[in-house]
Image (cartoon, rainbow, N blue to C red):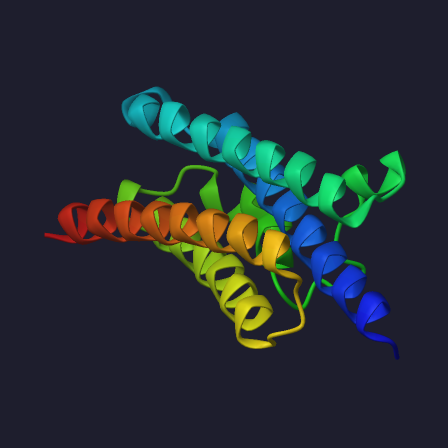
Length: 151
């Protein structure tokens, strides 16, 4: 596999996991009850963050527009999110946040792996690194909220 193909594959994987993240947060938003309305706002922000990530990544890859709608076929990285309806329906705050953190763990790892691969061109590294920092901050925020909810 050429470096260009490998780079495209890495970027496409990040697009897929960001799309999975959007789908997961949107599903969670639908199922969160009014007592956790603040989580809806937070999750809407993180879904928007991933939509923006997808646009930036698609521009790097020069990908066709259909890639912006792709989701992981195998689901190995982040498909946990797609089943959130049954997990979030009627769940308590700590459970909601625990599931959200599991999803964030997956995307955080995907970004870490993409950067550790050292196959991305410099301009892509800058964008992926910035996105990774934003993902890490989101993870840490969700984890802190989860820790508070468990207390």
